[in-house]
Length: 292
Image (cartoon, rainbow, N blue to C red; front, side, top):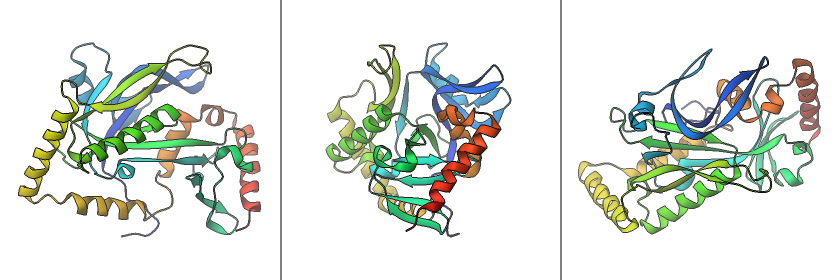
């Protein structure tokens, strides 16, 4: 295995609750009140929809639930969440931390340092560093690839916190059979003083519609027994994924990081190149000044 290259779950497409639109010559993110399932192909008009997007809409209805299963039993393998800071010009990740330790580019190369979280970090001031989560799921109806996943990326506290809680709870109540549970992604709305009482949307994960928790656990146990009979080794799959994630420092490639910047960091990616370059030089100089 090539060292330094993080091995991530095979990705068939994206799940989003918004899109990037062009306004006055700038490409800016626009929130939505429904899911969109896309392929991995993007044209000048945006991402090409995946066939599952139309199949799950049941006509022209808004897509607000997606039936899923998870690939792994361990919650942190399905959802990776961390604080991330990106180079504004290139989109390359510069620092990734969990609130205790971080991996950071410095003038001495890649280093592992203390991570005080964005509120307590000098170089994170000004919104440079945000929570960033990636959730990989299997969508029911995609029968051609049993190990292929769709990725949902988010910088929203509500989505990250809710998904992390659900994953840990469902793993606990199912006796560790998280990958066998019949689940669905569900879009929820809320309003806060920070949103000036307008609705904001976040992603939740619930038991599949029409099932009770007890019925879902029974289904998970039945599927687990079926997989055991077929020789399916879930523990080995989790171990392989854990090894792949530990093989590199940063999960997103340069190409993916540029997409992340455009979708989640518009105040950085949409600034003028001159301002962008100045801000990047200032940020990189701070990083380079840090000694281990």
